[in-house]
Image (cartoon, rainbow, N blue to C red; front, top):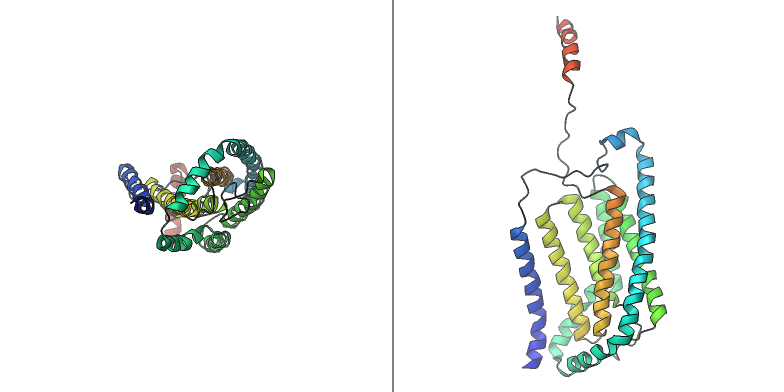
Length: 296
């Protein structure tokens, strides 16, 4: 009976996440038809674009993005260093009983299923998804086409080297099934960071609506839960390492999203038809006689 309960945690968790997303989406206000939000300085036809060359604006945006990414990386490392100290001292009291209970109650058939589902958080799987998304967005975005490849490249570099630095600082080994260094759990933070970034960039370019954001966040949360459950079920990571991976991936995702927003502005909706320039009434009145004489 206990084995069945452990097995049912996966569909129950996915159902709870989907249900919560559905409730939040229904409560979200409906966007007016055709209404779009325009970020300041995000359209090429804005006042900022008229005053300054496009190249200079891009360089300024690049500088802001890189500066925020560097400062944010240092802040994330400090937060994870504090969390790592707590995990090293308190973690074993939580990890050992959970690990022993999971090993005792696993079902071989379900273990085979989890071995397949957990691969969604593998390094090359997430990096491949980011590379494909970067290429597609660089082609389909209407403006700032340099942003998706830069955001994904910076996210991959920060996650990879910052994780190495954190693991080098703590040297916390994983359970017997995966004895390599496992703080924080890499697959879990990869799912949140990379799939979350894909969802955010797609949302900000092609929607910008609250309901869409809720459903995108629900999908990312379901993927992260799947990775959390599968890694724990397969005893590839300790419980506190997986929970630390959730926090780590969330911090990195917030860092990249903040860098994007401060570099190019808030999310804008789909591009509508070009708005014709409004001619001041004085100018139109002065031009009327000239038009009439030309027709005569």
